[in-house]
Image 1 (cartoon, rainbow, N blue to C red):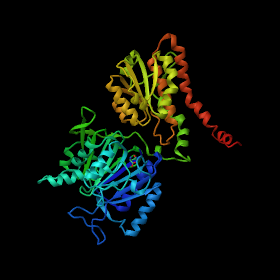
Image 2: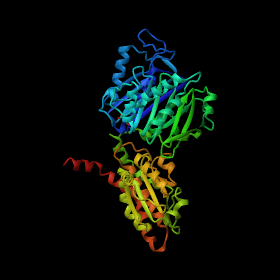
Image 3: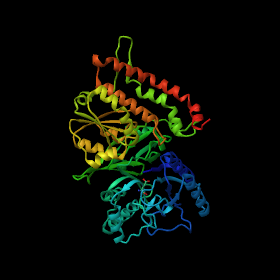
Image 4: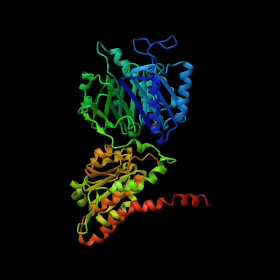
Length: 539
Ligand code: GLU
């Protein structure tokens, strides 16, 4: 699962060169996640020259697609090469434009331009799709599309999506009287047929300057930058936005990761599973599927959502003087640990007891203390952080603590009871297996607690209560500061659950003192940086 980015400008003039730069920079911000190929789609010139392919109807010329295996810089190079060869005008100005971009981590089909995204509905690029995730029923869909005359150019699971969109669109056109099918109706119909995990962005020649984003299981957010700030009062989006067709100049961004949005705007909407977000005429409308009886998608309703503000600074996503993000994040630990404990670990004057205050758990502590067991559920590093914190939790709470790797719990359909407290640990708060395990634990009636680094993430939203680790953005793929902050949060959780009794007071105070000293101890260790390097090199 890799990266998605889209940029839509509305009533604001942008040259093609600028649009390309925004898309490339968006991809560079997602680069840290690892990928094997990349691609973008932008519009062709509307002033048709003799070389521009003409489409049958009045619709604009097919969008341009550029795809390349390897890193983003090789995509950039190939795009500018092609631009020069085809004499595409980089100075051409667009007051409205919708561009999409993707970094791919191949799951189906080797890394190659034909397998890179955007994937297309066919030769005219009528529907283009960028996808993060895996479509599990793609073989069945492909078979039936082939029966309907579609031919496939890639080995990806994704290619069925734009082709299905074209199928739905063509069918609707065939049968339609005066009615025209809307872009969101096409995508809603496509979504009904998809199984698996996905974040998707659709671009279409039939719906110029519109974009649709939808997701199920993979993260996606919308960023909104309005040039007339007064226009954003209240900042809620609903279906009516289409009717009001606000003419205010704005730029809209879609991304799988807040990193690629924060340099443009901090106003975001975290898209939820089952939502279909339609960007059109400067408005944003959101439709949502209700979950059907068997986990399928059923009724659709229009929803109203409020924008939230990203708690992230642009500096956090720059490397500064460090060689790479992981090195930077290792050195940030004295500060990240301090932030994790700030306002939570309290050491008053001499008469005041040392104590811990976790606001997000306050109302649920009694229930947690009464639970029959605490089950930690996570994947990878988060699972290991919980493993490291287990002894202190058992010691202070006296409650049995068990550990589950999310996918394993799901495979076994392991027992989770109403009397359990299930603690979900995830840096991003979007880990797919942990999210499925959360759904499972909620169905089984357990009290669900989230420990995440990402405010507004799916785990933060869907658990009953929780604690943010406040470690700041972690970009390095191998976890460092998030890992240490997770352990500190779990130590504070142990202190909070354990409660204050005379018998354990000395031990609690020793732990609290130890936690207070931790940032300085880490600082001391980090001073040994060069000594460690010398040691590793055998000097
Ligand atoms: N499953 C898709 C593919 O292999 C998307 C992979 C991704 O998330 O990058 O093309």
